Length: 328
Image (cartoon, rainbow, N blue to C red; front, side, top):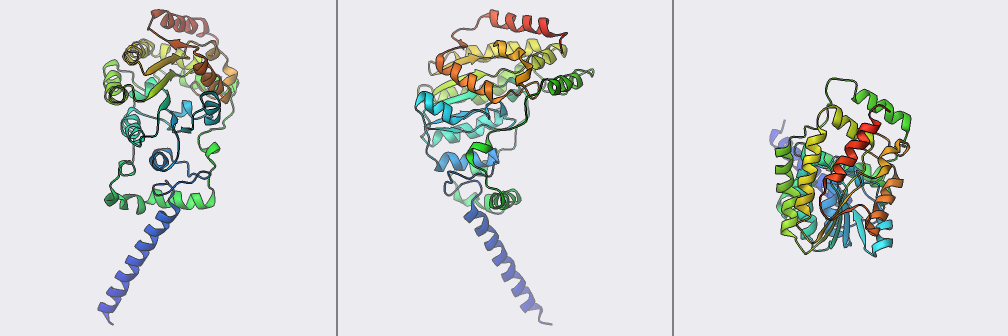
């Protein structure tokens, strides 16, 4: 048996397979690292935003957590005359802002940013941002080309390419009874398995991510930052498990910090009467498309804008909690 020949054939075959694998991922390019596709996406937000930011045309973005995923760029464009992309990230953490937003800004395209800010984003652990997709170093592209997730995304793209209008919209229906059942389950135990709202850590994570970005881009970009209208059920859970005061304390800190920048406008929809209409929620946090449209329209019209922090909003929210705490 000619072992040398077998070894050479095996090595050549392996190399050819690797080349073919890398070429397949590179040609399909599921995360649009090398070219743009206007009408087809794979839907992996943390992996795809970098390529879209580099290769697409836009001058405004919507970003934040799943709370902003149901925004329609078309509505934003029709009101302001921008060319908008939705760069929302499911379960966004401060780590996503720290690593992804500076890269998007560095492309030199974005002039306007609508950002939803969730307190829980600064309470969570760091996410899993694939940093090799957010640099200009071609030598680490092998991490993209020879990656199981990239290969899986390429295959899924071939099978089921997603139009842009679908990748940032979840379709679970709003349902009052389902929300009440979820609230009942969440509130039935001795503790809430949600985020830990430690004030010092919240401030630290906010400072090293968003606040740092505001400082570095002060005046270069206009920001419309808003606190999303969670349902009254979310605030009742925070109240029940003793986190509402820390939540509000951090919110005050973040608002006062942001108001120090002339380029940042801040809006608070957590005091809107909408939060009491449980028919518009799919769970204690996530609301219907109707509320997304209301948010954009209200920002455009200057409603719910905070020009200085006052304790009245905190008192109003706590009053709503008191009024509703026995109704769910």
